[in-house]
Length: 132
Image (cartoon, rainbow, N blue to C red; front, side):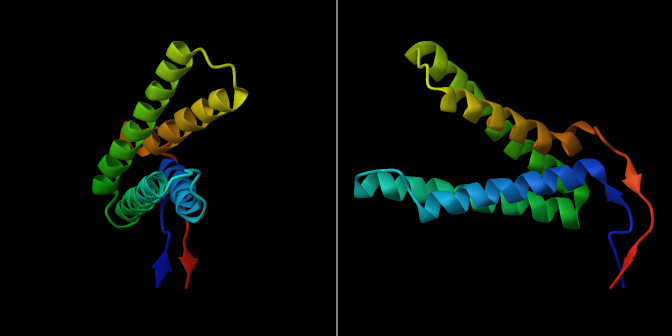
């Protein structure tokens, strides 16, 4: 059985970004930052959404790349929206915390990594196959 016959670099980067997003969701579930029970529940719900959104995009990229590209593009737009909200918060709240800027950079990089297959960037493929 041949696995990974032609790996697309953009899809590989996007799947790695999906794994990172899923881990971030798992961390939200395991260690919510809220003090009240309701805020912990909200963070865990957000973590579950992160896990399943990224898992769905990764599955789509692996099993049906044409559909997965659109799914990864939708998740990328979510990360871009988070970055826009972070920029608005930095401007309106005039926060000087460097962690907010680092989070903004992470959100922009996640959006870029997930958008690569959708934009058709990095279409270089690796030839060969791995026998299993």
